[in-house]
Length: 239
Image (cartoon, rainbow, N blue to C red):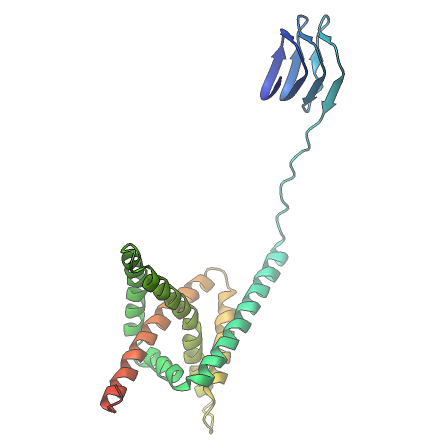
């Protein structure tokens, strides 16, 4: 007989071995086990006078489950700091690459946040909601699965890139406060802005708000910048 139960009371005859896990085990005076008794319990079995066990009796105490230790506030902060540092370095690398190959796009997007902040915020909110819905609608058509996957990948990339463009905007505003005589390479503004955003994201609750605003402003400004770039291309006869 094998089993697991809360409170076990054996009072009849069992022809072979018994292996049981229980909170408590009692063998009454009429119990007869024609084999070994192996049981796991925190308490020793109560075996009444007259109970018979033909084989051996083996008692095992279950191991107590140890609750995972809660990390200290300092350890939590250190872990969060390392994640933020890794995120900053990754974004910095991506930002420098984007700025090197498409500096004008970075500048135009940053200018859109400055010249049309509310427009960028509203459009970003609209894009954040409607794009996933559109991807799902295309996905359920079956034949649109490849297109939906490509769109989903582009959407994720755009969300990640928002920090670069908002970082440029923030860094550019700070650098302009010092009124530099020479034109500063946009990459420096990106690095400075990303560093400030990383520090703000370390602050509890405020970091969540900053992250949301970065996505909303970034998405909206990116779309407005695309409209601006295409408009100028049409005026120049390039599109």
